[in-house]
Image (cartoon, rainbow, N blue to C red; front, side, top):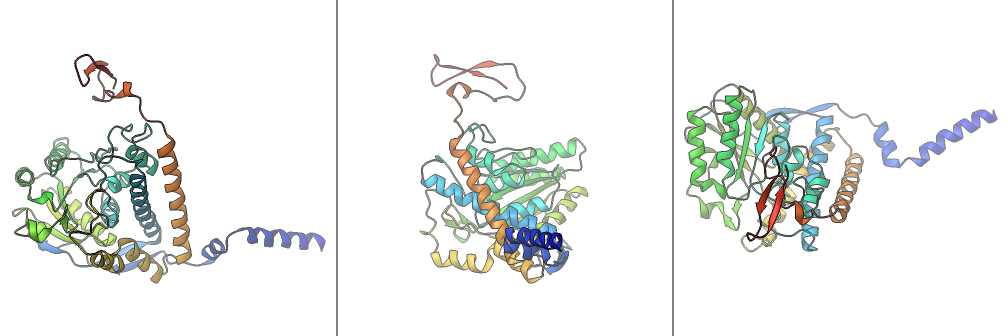
Length: 390
């Protein structure tokens, strides 16, 4: 009898040590998946578009939620570090646009390629780099993904080509990556991103023409967040139907605040390219909560009420959370646990990014080429020399 009482006591004490929320989550039966209706895409030169219903599994839902929450918290931490003058120079934040980077990644393969402009932190994370490497790059430390020498606009990973600071210049490069995919006979596509502000650049139309002429597997993606720096799209463009800008290239206009809509549109576009039909154009209608860059408060050309309305009605994280909770794919308590874990991960990464040493001046010329013998690089004047090591 005593042994039985002792065993019961151990079981009860073990349960008491666990947080109540964890016991509740563990004991609840969740659905494995759920079917959702998504907004129909506007089409250009296409007879059929992406499906208007999609299935979300519990596993994918939790994964997308964690990734979007990580990008959101990472950007808020970058904002804080910038205001503390720990991050210096250019810094463009993407909070509000999380459904774009996470949804696009969900619709392609890891072997596919992606190139974007300077609002690149979210894509750097979804392409596989850690928050540690990203924040350390922002603070200019050796543990950064570009060894602390690239900063906000120049981050790279496998099959991720940046982070490019010149407006629109990444688009011809993306067409070139797609040319390499076709030339090498690989069943891969390249996602080539640019903003509504860059959409008026002449080089983009040149890239459209060559991609269509050679039927390159290139998905041109315009992230339309409604403002090019501080200029609204209506004041900058004679036509704001960016998905039609390719003229002879088929196009889609997608709800960029809905991760499921972005995922399905990306799968559709990737299948179009892989089938040999040539390029396709996607316009993601999205919104950034921060200003264009850290020098822009973001409220001189739009009202605080406008920003708050988007936050309250169209926030991508809120939309996914509501879907999952209302369809028994997750509980509020479980998602709160993820929030706590994400915040801890961000704090740990921020501590690393502020404690890690800066690269020494001697390494200024390193990594100019990937596999070359060492050579000398001239500094600010002819008497200063730096060694370059691959």
